[in-house]
Image (cartoon, rainbow, N blue to C red; front, side, top):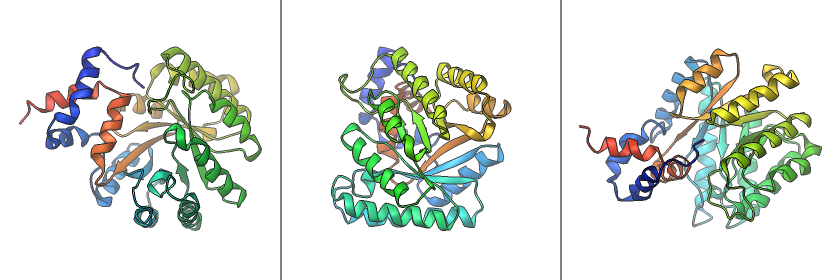
Length: 303
C-alpha cells in the first residue's frame, strides 16, 4: 500500500467530505463495482476474463440496530446463490459488525453460521474480514468457533501492522487456518500497532513466513511492490506450488501490478465491493491511500 503520500495528498483526503458526492461517485466507480448485485456480477466477469478470481463484498459495517443484521445475512445468501447461478470463480468476504457483532455476538454467530453453511452447500468459501482492534479477539473467536464446529470453508483476515498478529498466528496453529494477510488501514495507537513503513513491511513478511511454515494457505493482500517482491522471494525460497497461496488486490488499484502477477503465473484474486454504502468505503480507502484525493480533485474539473 501507500507510504502515506505527501502533505498535499493528506490535505486533500481530509477535505474530501466537503466535496459533492456526485464527484466522489465519479472517482468511486473505479474502486466500487456499483450499487447493485448485477453491477458486481458484470465487473466480476470482466476480471475473470482477464484471468483473475474475485472476492465479492456487500458494503456495510457496524449496524446500529441488531435487527439490521438479518438484511446483511440475506444479502450474502443471495450473493452466494448468484455466484453459483452465474458460474463465477469467486467467493465472499464479510464484516462481522454488519451482522451485529458489537450488539449481540451470539445472534451474530447464528447469522454468520447460516452464511457459512449455505456456502458449504454450494461448495464456496467465506472470508471473515478483520476490522478495528476493539473487535479483533471477538472476530478470531467466531472464526475459531466455526472451525471447531467443522466448517473448513471459512478463513480469516489478519493485519500485519498489529503487534499481536504473530501471536495470533501461533494461537491458530492447531487449526491450520486459511488466511488473508494485509497491512491494515484502521488508525490504531502505537502501543498495539507498528507505525513505521519499514517495520510494518518487515512484520508482514515475518508473519507470512510463519503462516507458510504452519502449512496455511495465504492470500497475500498488498499493492506495495516491496512487499510483493519480498513475498515472491519467500515463495521461491520455500519452493511453494502455485496452489499454496494467491495474491490479492483491491478493485481498481495498481492494475498493472495485477497483470504482471498473472503473467508470471501467480494466482490473483480481486476484491469486488458493491452496494449502497459506497461512500463510507471510499472514505476508508482514502485513509489507506491519500493519493486518491488527487483523482477527486481532477474529477471536479472534468465534464
